Amino acid sequence: MEQNPDIRKGRHWVHELSVHIVFVTKYRGNVFTQPMLTRCEEIMNNVCADFGCELMQFNGADDHVRQHLWDGHLWSRSYYAGSTGAANHATVSRYIQNQDRPTH
Image (cartoon, rainbow, N blue to C red; front, side, top):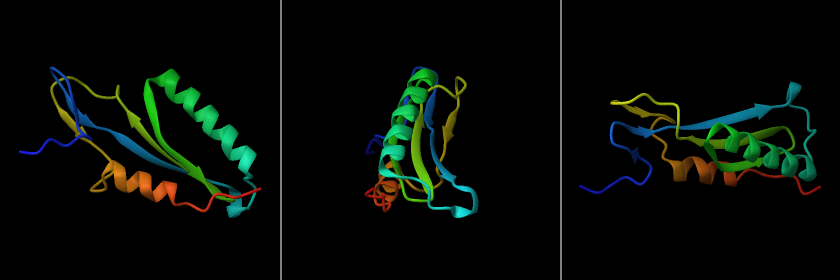
C-alpha cells in the first residue's frame, strides 16, 4: 500500500490536521495592499511558530486573505483525525497560491 505523505504518524497517534482559513474584509472592501499582505504573512508565521503549527500557504487579494495551516499538536493519543475534507494539501495549497494578489 502506498504511503500518504500528508498523514503524520507517531507511536500512539495518526493525523492529517490542516485548516484552510479565509479572512474577508467588511463589505468585501478592497483594502489590502502588497505590503499589508507581506506583513500579515510575517505575523502569521510568528503566530504559527508560537503555537507549534506550520503555515503551509499564504496569499490574498484586495478583499481577503487565505491561509493553509498544518497543525501538529491538536490531537489526542490513539486515534486518527483528518481535516479539509476530501481535498489534499496540494489541492488546497494550489488553490490559495493561485489567488490574484494585488501588485501595489
